[in-house]
Image 1 (cartoon, rainbow, N blue to C red):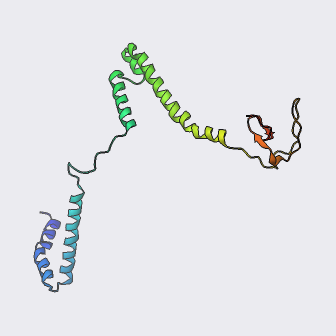
Image 2: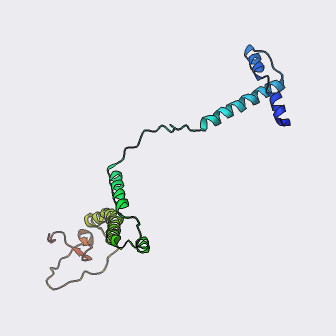
Image 3: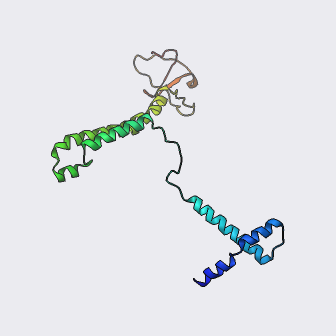
Length: 180
């Protein structure tokens, strides 16, 4: 037994007696008070560390409900795992699985279409909706040139604020004469 263990064993050998004295209300010496406090803190620390070790049953969270898309992607991944051993061309060519190349091309095309529609097309819907349904108002100070006249145009006098700006033709349009 090492010296520190012997000191520790001697230091903590009568802790139960000190606890009983404390319960009875007897006054302890400063050294005994410090020893008791140190012992209790060490004991609490050991219990806390022991409590931090998870059992085989922990954590006891309820199982998460899988959503529709999660299930769909899991089934799709299982399908591709059954039919494609490699997801890259190099694996098929290296191992001589040339018959699986059309299936690999189908897999790659499907992945590309999903990423294209999921990343490019669907997120652009709000932008397209905004650009098609928003009325663009141009401030008076923005467009101060005289309006162009073309053959067949009707001439009219108006203030610019009474006109609507057509962003497609990039001209002002009289809302009264606007054809729909």
